[in-house]
Image (cartoon, rainbow over all chains, first blue to last red; front, side, top):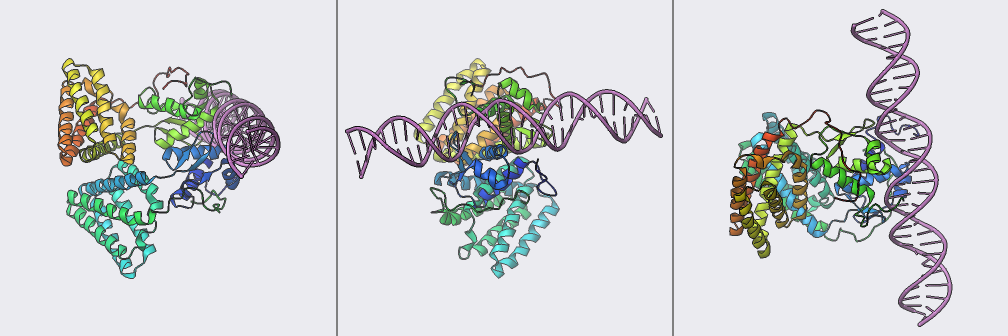
Amino acid sequence: MSGKRSLVRLGTTVDQMVRAIGDRIVTGVLRPGEKLDETSLAARFEVSRTPVREALGQLSAMGLVERRPNRGAIVAVVTQEYLTSMFESMAELEGICARFCAERMTVSERRALEAEHEASARLVRLGAEEDYEYFNTEFHSRLYRGAHSTHIYELTATTRSRLAPFRRAQFRLAGRLAKSWQEHDAIVTAILRGDSAAAGAAAKDHVAIVSVASAVFAVGEQPSGPRAATPFAATLSGK
Amino acid sequence: MSGKRSLVRLGTTVDQMVRAIGDRIVTGVLRPGEKLDETSLAARFEVSRTPVREALGQLSAMGLVERRPNRGAIVAVVTQEYLTSMFESMAELEGICARFCAERMTVSERRALEAEHEASARLVRLGAEEDYEYFNTEFHSRLYRGAHSTHIYELTATTRSRLAPFRRAQFRLAGRLAKSWQEHDAIVTAILRGDSAAAGAAAKDHVAIVSVASAVFAVGEQPSGPRAATPFAATLSGK
DNA sequence: TCTCAAGAAAGTGCATGCAATTGCTATGCC
DNA sequence: GGCATAGCAATTGCATGCACTTTCTTGAGA
């Protein structure tokens, strides 16, 4: 091989490419419908086509890319109907997580959840959208972990990541920040109270509201073809 | 290429291998922990190692095999804890499907569900375990489709297939056949009534009961190492 | 000008080969 | 006898090459 690619190599070349390409899809750098040419990807990442092909295969198994035999791969195109069903699933899944959280979270998990949630109130007052977004992600992640169910966690986390590109700008909506916090508050309160039904319902509603808020932005965001060429740096090292 | 492998070729060689190997894992022919040697697989299927590697990569992305870098692949080992979480998820997912069915199934879907269910009563009286098993699969599949939610369908179907090896002999339990039918009956009745809450609860309970019934057999079925060599024919053609 | 076809170009699918890593075995040392 | 280590066999990871498929291009005919 032509030298280590970085000091600490995280997994094989294929793994790194799966992460690299997957990230670009999930973050929206690569847009749905965009062609993923094996040769150019190989050139950009400075590897041969073999690992590229394997990476595309895995991403296809994850549903992030679509592979047409003999006709190349494209970033998975999500129909409006499928998007709706994903948001729908997400609401149900988060509802389950919250319900389980209310029943199963340890004392320290409950304390941490509450503390972080209280801390994020400050960000709402400041209108710090970016920072709140970070806390929001962390908050939801806590719910998934707190369910103490590995498989539910996986289903929820992967569904969430696939929804990520369609949820980007939700906090730009006027007043969304404050409302989001209030919805979180309802979830936290129910969990701390141990009221699983209320926690589940609150989480489900919360996601349903986010879905609507996101749908506003999702409209027209679904390109039928590729946009501009993607100018990503050919580094496999960082995440 | 060295000649078509069959008259109608379903997808690429890799796709066929994913199906072939995946089937053998899901049906329990390949046992958890069993080593998946690239060279021998390539020899068995009469292809080179490249498509084998791609197939293993995709199967790993699906969670059916585990890949240790530089150390080969094995059939995914499911811990007792993870198995529990999968059954748990399954119950929740089927509950969601049944709930949606009650709300969304078309008239013809409802009719078909009822008709098939009634027909299967005969199999219970005959004690035809094999045939009932087939109807049972079809019944659940109807629930997943009837939810009219593509993503929920996918989550549910893949979870079900991953649970398949652990559910094999459930109908051998005395009286399980009749009880299963009664549980189905509760689900069907609620769906036809349009009572989504009852349908969801009934489906959830049904799966929970199956989980317990299956767990009896799952115990001790988890081998720590490979069993006998797997005698599968090297045909990529059939499913 | 439009349609269609033949050929060329581009790109995918798989086989093969080599370097690198792992794991086993055997030999030497304590 | 037990443990460490060097060498070897087995296996994985990736690059390269060639055949096949699709797509683009060009030009003749209507």
